Length: 388
Image 1 (cartoon, rainbow, N blue to C red):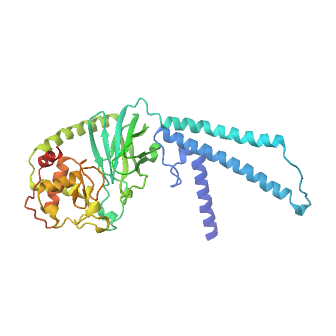
Image 2: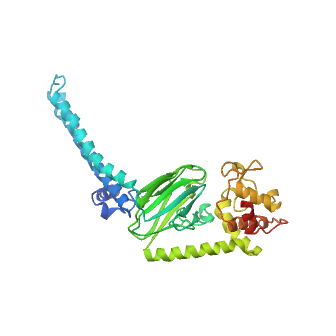
Image 3: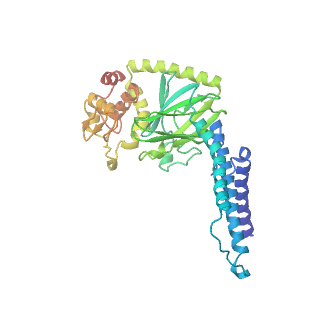
């Protein structure tokens, strides 16, 4: 009975694989290792091309090895067959040269069409710039004049094994990329520090993000929903903690979301100019710190000597003059020397954060874990002044 069950499971897996290849539009979700359900024309073209090439290879495999095994069996010495003695055959040489050429030509035609279509970024309906950071993504809506950061939202308790992992473990973010359905979106991809790679399997796109270069790709999502991907280039110790999440909305819902973002943009400008209470700064600063700084300095502020991240508990920079700590956060630091370059150093530059976020995070460090700095409140206006 055990043998029969094993055989049944084996044939069930084989049937699922065959169904996913023969009927890709129906059986995408059957094998978990197969392609994600495509929601863009390019993704569908890639899967169709994959299936076509796969079956061509299957036919070639069967033809070549079938002929070989037939020849070995039918012409074996044990049945009295003697080897033929011949040298070259012009007809055979021509046949086995022309046939592979025609097969390759037949394969190259759809492959070339798919590659050209995947790189045709002309006439987009909207353009978004994607910048990779260690370890988050920044999305700039070029035509709308605003942008935001997208960071991992998986709770630390799940990462450290103190809580059960949910369905989208390490694939959830605080701010997903939001786009309208049935819209050609051109994506400009670059990086601020090291090489990253922006990858969304359901869209059929994967573009390396290289510092100093801007490369582009595009997609047109045909179905409303949430689609997940990851950074697909090893980019450092938190490489596995920078997922890509894209939310595709209906055009009406996207218009509402866009209006909300522009309203927040105006509110953010006002927030940077107002005088904040200590309580509000600390509350917001804790969120900013845990999303950005805790990866190195730890949520407890105890640091990580293995990567040169000092403890912030009782740290002389945290307890010292606010201007120096603002400089360190804005410009980065190497071996205790503030670096004006945006890259390099043990402490990277966090100039990409807003004035409110930086002021809040600094205020939080000056009041958390038992720290009692003399200048315990840092206002956004102070950060703004240091940027100039």
